[in-house]
Image (cartoon, rainbow over all chains, first blue to last red; front, side, top):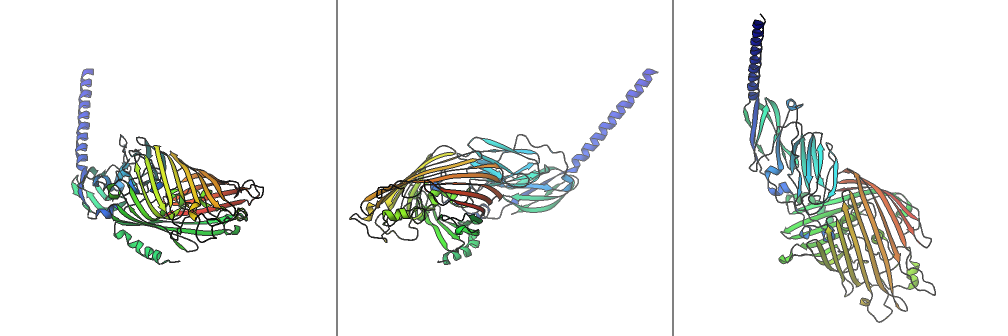
Length: 242
Length: 371
């Protein structure tokens, strides 16, 4: 009697486990179908002079006591690659409240050749960013933006300081010594963003079904927005021209 | 004053971004201040509280890869337009590794640099060596005349405000060293910013600075020139005006690390003066030390101590100083309302030493915006 009962319980248990596995399998298959992609290309039509601005000349460098470029001509660094100054990201209510795991190791905002690299850095809320100084002079990185105010002071070549960003928003970063240096940190609430390659192509993967706004951030400003709807895990193409 | 050039500049400014080789920038500052009601020549508006403003417009033109035209204009509430800077700059002249500049610009003497502007000045005023007018004129004078002018603010400054002058300069860098050599119409204490040179002498200026480690720079400058203008009284002796020279030298230091900035400078100047009976050397020593500390983003405190000391003059058995020794303390707080908008509250106390002189103080609230 006990052995029959034990066998029946075992059978029921096996069936139950199989049912669960089956359900999970179906669920996972459905989840995959719910995740789509946004692909696209960014085309820049503006001239480099429009994008980079005019030369900035330090007329008092002749007795400035910290090393300055020859003649005090502090022109913007050579045009940054597209991958350093463009980001495409999605916004939408359905994407909020997700369990976000900030990236590790820390993203880096370099100070090199009297410029920030990259010029636009997308990060997730809760991420810590490192700010190494790779120039042979002082920089003083600071921001007065409301998501995060900070002032890192002056530190020499090879040193680095870090800042954690706990609030979503746009953080504009400057150097107190070199006024032409600027960068933007986009503190985002979801992981659905992409940095394009230097040809302008980008892919945002594993996007849940839904309707969102795809935004292009270029340099210091929001350069474009488009509505995008993901259905049945399909791939949607979104192109930007700026 | 001729405002036409500036009006034209202002009209052109909105169009400047059309061409990437041109750039307009500037600074506007406004303040409200209250000076002590005192007889000090430095007292502003006779001690009555007042508002005031200053506007600077900078125009940069890049006319070739290594050739620039730089223009600064400045105006105060009296609406008189000044051209502080109008220079042609050639970078890496003929690939020789140095730069050349000619026109009107700030002389390479000292390390004031862009702290002369409100948005870069931690405080309100400049150190005494840049502002205080001594009792020595740049014209022929008598002993009694110099002594009677003590504390009246009628003579030369030790360093003439922004030391903008008309001349030419070669400058450059060799590793961590920086050098500049310039000649100009006027002198360090009496710049000829509005006039052509009125004697056969040029001011000769040399500056050297060295940065042993990032954040610490040591500098030294020296200059020499005849300083007497030809429009005053005739010289009392045969020697021409070239005999009466100003020799001036200075050392300076700039240190910064983390959130602390420090600047210091000491200046020594000697003038050979053609008094009635004999030529006499008068000297003055000036100094300042200032520091700024940023406590947290947007907010800083700063303080400066500056002073002047003068040599003694022989006169009928007594040997008074040819001007009164001075000391000044200026301290304040600054708060950045935005990246380019700075609000400062500053208090300044000025004392005349050794003799009973006017006690001067100043409280000022200043707002500076750069663009």
